Length: 279
Ligand SMILES: NC(=O)c1ccc[n+]([C@@H]2O[C@H](COP(=O)([O-])OP(=O)(O)OC[C@H]3O[C@@H](n4cnc5c(N)ncnc54)[C@H](O)[C@@H]3O)[C@@H](O)[C@H]2O)c1
Image 1 (cartoon, helix red, strand yellow):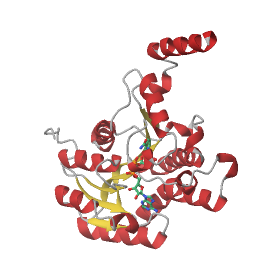
Image 2 (image 1 turned 180 degrees about the horizontal axis):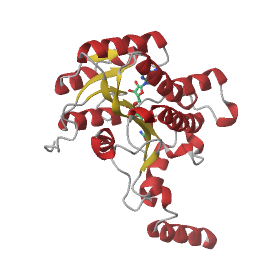
Image 3 (image 1 turned 30 degrees about the vertical axis):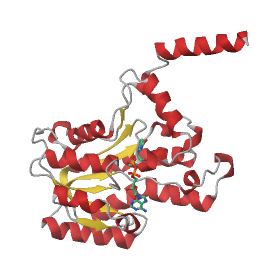
């Protein structure tokens, strides 16, 4: 790990969603620690039972507080414990939470189970609203703070295998904008970072993930950014260097979103289709 720049010195935060070493939230926690922040780590009780998070807690000196983000009482409890731990509020919140039972069970978009879809939206999008509402009620968000939630370009474009997560990300980005407008007068920023496909537990659980990963990697002029690179970007958003960046969906994708097709793909496709024509 490099030495860092001290960008988050004195800052306190809550980091949701670190499951294992590959998790984007795990990499963000390490980067926040490197930059001098203190934080609490939170994940659903069922995820904590796997035990992997203990190692991150030890490495970063962060307490681990269980919380299922679909349950109001558990979020309230988390806010109380966090306030008690820091003796005050927090300056940043990372929301790196996503789960779709429909994707997990490989349900097609035209054959969704609606109970599961509600779960998808509740866990992956509405939870951002819940967390912010409870944080405000408990007076735990400091003025000038920063909230980042992780999104995906499925919010803007159709990626068939991403199923109802496309809808969840569109809602997540809308909540970030709308809550951001309410918190702006206190100088609190709310943004989403739209990260490229990344090889994590949630990512690789999607049918067709490898195809989506390779497609994005070939089209993006800089290639897919890693979870560690995403972490560095999030650090800048938590820092005081981005004080007036709010209500944005910020692409962290190596240039994918504004690219059409790469030279390599044009050449490969031309060859592939000429072979098909000859056959
Ligand atoms: N991996 C990718 O390709 C990719 C790309 C863009 C955006 N993202 C987003 O990044 C975020 C982090 O995902 P990741 O790829 O690091 O995978 P991950 O599986 O490591 O993280 C997802 C986390 O959500 C947590 N979670 C699920 N249900 C929960 C609940 N009810 N309460 C609290 N936590 C719950 C899981 O325990 C897990 O820690 C997600 O929002 C994901 O959609 C991922």
